[in-house]
Image (cartoon, rainbow, N blue to C red):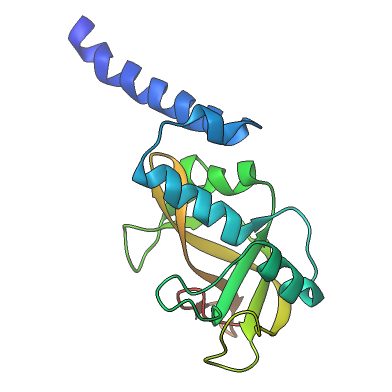
Amino acid sequence: MKMQLLPCVVVVLLWVFSTAQCSSSNLETRLQPSDYNERYKTFRRQHVIGKMAAKDCDKVIKKRKIKNSETAKCKEVNTFVIASIKEVCEVCQTMGKPYHKNKTYIESVKTFQLVVCKLKSKGKRLPKCAYRGQECNQHIVLSCEKGLPVHFQRSFSLNVTIGGSLNTTLGGHDAMLC
């Protein structure tokens, strides 16, 4: 009987731990150093903001030092989720479901307000990055590790067509304007 309860206790403790991480104001000081922690911090810096307008793309991307990590050029597209980090973390914990096209990703069950910033001229080098922003409400698809978001994969909206069938409009890998 005791052995049957052990897996349940472990699952509950993991859930409590991951939920506490996202709701804490001093999150970074409580997490142990690890690769997923660094990926989470990068995700948070690049994609989560409490308030932002489409016209703020240049200012926010410059302030947060967002760039293409492989080339040191301006990032071509960056999507900001206008929400608290707690709301975004909930996608990885209880408010998400496996993404139907790739089960390694988690799809939000609700839509989020987004600002998608697209580079006006491809190939520009820092600091000459100029962006065009667009606001929309869409579902988000994330990679999660240990209950934390670590990668923004895409966003999409569901459109109902005539006849009631669902049509999914996808924005691939941070690459679409709404």
